[in-house]
Amino acid sequence: MSHIENPDYFKGRGAQVNTHNQFLKREYVVEHAEGIDENLIEDSKTQIFEEYPKSIVSESKSPDIPSPYSINPYQGCEHGCLYCYARNSHEYYGFSAGLDFEQKIMVKRNAAVLLEAFLNKKNYQPKTILMSGNTDCYQPQERKLKITRTLLEVFLKYRHPVSIISKNTLMERDLDILSELASMDLVHVSLSITTQNEELRRKLEPRTVTAKSRFILMEKLANANVPVRLMMAPIIPGLTQSEIPEMIKTAANAGASDAAFTIVRLNGATAEVFIDWIQKAYPDRADKVLHAIASCHGGKLNDSRWGIRMSGEGRVAESIHQLFHLAKKRYLADRQMRPNDFRHFNTPAGKQLNLF
Figure 1 (cartoon, one colour):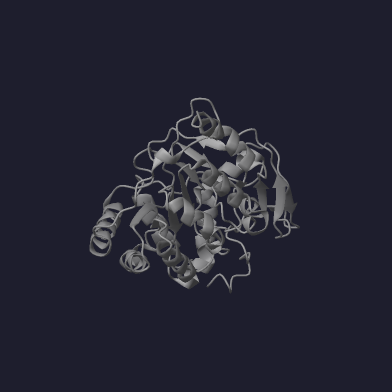
Figure 2 (figure 1 turned 90 degrees about the vertical axis):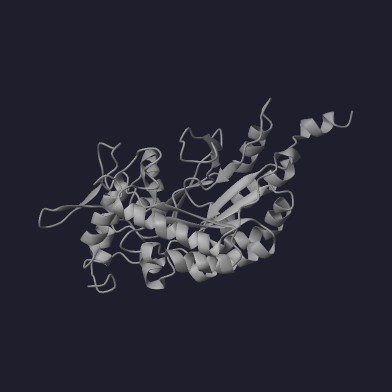
């Protein structure tokens, strides 16, 4: 039975349930006549919550992440990707990692002001700041709110390196800023593309644009001399690993300078969301896919070990690594991302000193 035929399938969103929030002692449920309690699913409209944090730049100690600093102008994400590790962070806000993550979006309108304050800290030494380390900075709300664009304007003003990862073609709107940053080697872009199978994409990440549209954006970025890489994140064994060679070939033809990948890991409540989804969307192969994922993480869906959690281990993971590296060697040989140039960075205070 396909998800379209399944009467229990909640259309228009990725998650099919609102998982239990581990930090909450109480939760609202719907009590059926049969006496079965089910999670309360409200209307499917997106709700916006204003957040005014005191800082916008987060620091990570994880050795798996190349840059210690990241910015997330939004919390929660309407893209609805079933595999998203960021779902778990929504619980810290009192929401569920399930449908709440896609429907209840926190926005940080003061992000640009906070970034300027961070860059003006005494003795600050520039390091590349990643945008979208948690949720997509170009998700649908950005079209109206333009928070990400204001952040890019600050990076350009201070000549500060920035790295962006996104799966939304809205990025094309900011090509003027991105190309100017690229002219000084101050930007890297990673386009996240999980599958070219359009039927699978509609089920797996229902509110994203097509892979074809993302590859068109990749070509436009490359033509504007913006360094861009294909990010296959995540590769899902049993669902998407067979697409690796063709994806890298397509990226190479679009002008990509590099390609990278992660293997899916289903930490915390994300596992519950994904299991519920795949049993409804692909009941005929659900067990096979889940077993393949577990085989990459020591027999568990949940894997938090640094150095292994993103790359996986075991026979299935090794076959993915080999297939990826062979395809990369064939189609992206002798290409690489241009390194960021930190020499341009200057604060307004520094510019004043340079006058004397």
